[in-house]
Length: 359
Ligand code: MRU
Image (cartoon, rainbow, N blue to C red; front, side, top):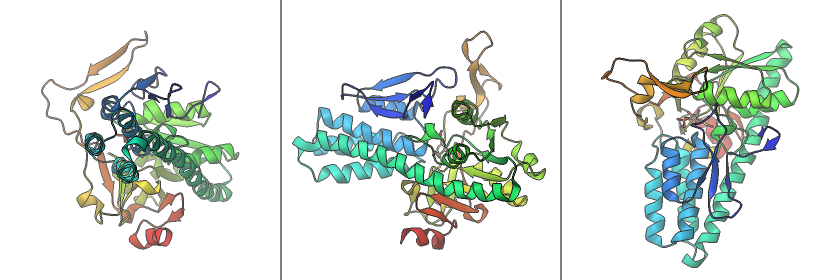
């Protein structure tokens, strides 16, 4: 993604080779600030406080965290402990576990003296692969958008929830990759951006990155989607996912399920974009078995923003002492999903559909 004409990924190795740098997503959209992560504690903290977030980027950041650890101490014990520490940072996005297993499998077969070099190479490969995967997702999703456009020959209206764009990955995004591909191909697209309470990733991140790329969008509060769908103003929904079960159930930012219900009721196609590392083949019933992150209640009782005078503030919106249920994700049952857009192609959200792409 270009920011003021400069091409950026969301994460990269520092020029001195000793650290990684990320865009601090807690500061967007008000400030574009990069942060240097020097060690595994910095990486764990960045994931926990959501300086980096989004399933694919969480996985890639953790992989770099392992590399940072290996440059200081490359023993078996260190490798195991570092992976355990990073795995505990966030529970829902399965890309985290996937990346750590891949790093561990790669490094456990390597002599301690070579682990530093190999760890950096592997982390770089995971990052590069993410970009290639997302480009392919973009092309498969583009075909779906193009099909809508050829029928309609007017602006294609796409609704999305949370941020599954460039900022949630290394580059391109998952749900937004098809949007960028369509926009770049000259297809007129417009995105309805759910603000995505409580942390407002839609308002602060999706709106920001669409604006950077020049894609027309309209920011809406989370409850508007149903109304828009009833009035024919949404041609398709495309969202990302933090973990997709082997039966096609899809876990994503809380509120996604309600969008899927509204889409189903109004015959609006509901697509989910995902890279292969987001599939959890060990879970056959996503609704029952995908762990849902419970986050701090302050995210619900306080709103963060910037005053007209430019001051960054957090404002309380509820009585002190309110009980809060801050469920960060929900699961959309596969029966509500029109299709899964993967780097291998588009398939039905069923065991059978996935088998068509993965066996
Ligand atoms: O809590 P977050 O911001 O990490 O949640 C992100 C999402 O829910 C995204 O939609 C999901 O990770 C898919 S990202 C390509």
